[in-house]
Length: 130
Image (cartoon, rainbow, N blue to C red; front, side):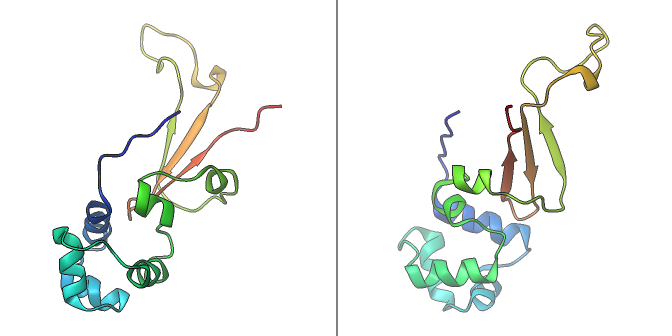
């Protein structure tokens, strides 16, 4: 499966801020950078520095660096995931049972489970094929 992301890092920063109900000033204070740094990154004038990203990842440990830069989770992260509490959405390939489709959910094979968190990160679980 191939993921294409049209969002930029600044857009994902806004998602983090929105999910924590932070404005640019309080976000800067929380990660420990100057408010002008956040303003310049959000406006697209500057790209975030290594120091900026390091402080952000320390302040928000559930944010993946790969997600921050690319919008997707890496294969290693997907393979090594531990279950974390949060809302779970199960996605299966094929039809969803309907009134016309009498196949029970228990007879369907789960091919992928995606867990979405309130900070807009997500984990993907793939069943082991044996």
